[in-house]
Length: 620
Image (cartoon, rainbow, N blue to C red; front, side, top):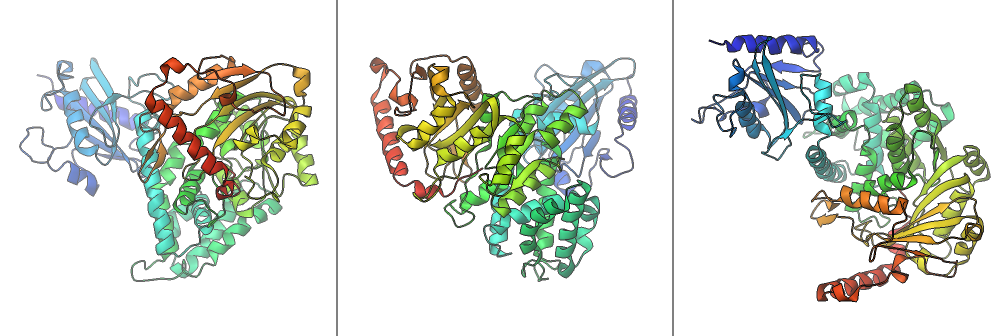
């Protein structure tokens, strides 16, 4: 008769070989029990006999760095008992059993479920992921798309589960919900101003990159923690070998947090102080996102959520961040790769640069290429000191300490010379949106970006639709020097809840439009698949945006013309630069609901276009 202990010993040997039992407390392996209270509670009625008692798999594996995931391993001695046809015999089959336990844990965890049967000579393994909130398992696959077929390191298991689409969506939703909790805590308990909140988040995440701070912050009394917090930020920046002048510029905005009177007080509810509580919350809830999602714009996402809660109407810094799906779209439209040099003259928190960096590194094949991308091929300018600190922090959190970030106006003579010297091949910009006639026109920023790119470079901008429809001297100046390749009409609420209707413009730099002497491609991209969800804003709830976006990019790259979607048209500076002005309509397919929707969209457009001031000075 097969002995299940032999199977367990085989699993133990492989766990030990792969470092699961290394004595560094980064991985905790438990057998048929758990010291984690939430896991014990979840499995308290998980008996496979169905009688309501407690039940445990052979192994329960957790990693404190990723507290929202748990690995379960269920063993059976005989490979014939690996999986039943209906997966409904938990007591008798390995796959059935591990999925049974996973369903008890999945309300609170993303579960990596591993079923093993047999011995060293003949064995079978199955790997599943059950995303948090789900009861249906999916095959666990690597980030490259290959199914996991044998036991791999804990790091590789977590990375594979993290790239699961449903897991990503759930984690993003959890982060947004937590950011609201953090916002309310900072407002109600710490009494931080709107502009101070994102700095507290960014500074804390940088400080937590210092191992000494991460392990010892809880030992400091409230009166001393703020100083230790600031010293740790400077330490991380020094370790990144940043110039002293750059460190001074970056750390100055954080000084307000260091001396904030409420953060250093010890109180009954928080005896170690409010800063300690902020650090603890971020260490537990957000640092795992950075370690797992290396391309996730954590600081930008938090800052964007804070602005949503304050209405983005100037109560904070009067800035609306470019949504992550838009920054990713820009990188795909520009077709950036490991050889691209990307410039953003209005960098904000660095969202365009982060998305470009992620896309560029996908084509990098050597460590030298990765280092070059991070340290030489990303160029940004930000005038607002707090935003500059956030942008630089954002880059440091991704292991880049030498991004070419300039603080000041992109029109400053010295900064202009610096931008031009990089000979950028791609430009991306979401310029400050003019609140009055005294402000610089949005297209002036677009023109300046294009003027500082290398000849033949691609420049992309997202601007109010009025920039494309209204005649202006700025449109004439652009076409005198650059070619208008394409304009895409974006969804009316892409910046929800801020009211501004936008379009995306694509140019070829330093080639006059008249010289190109060809048609411009216009796309009608009003439906991106996002829907409004209470407390979450616009989200890709039905997971359709990627498919829609990929079709957009394909039709743009190939200049495809489809009725109701896209059109080619010769235009001048005096023409309207929007698809709606040139697309032919198939009236036979129009329904009454279509007519109502158009009227509603037009009413929304006219209302928002007449009051663009509500947008504030928009940046990333």
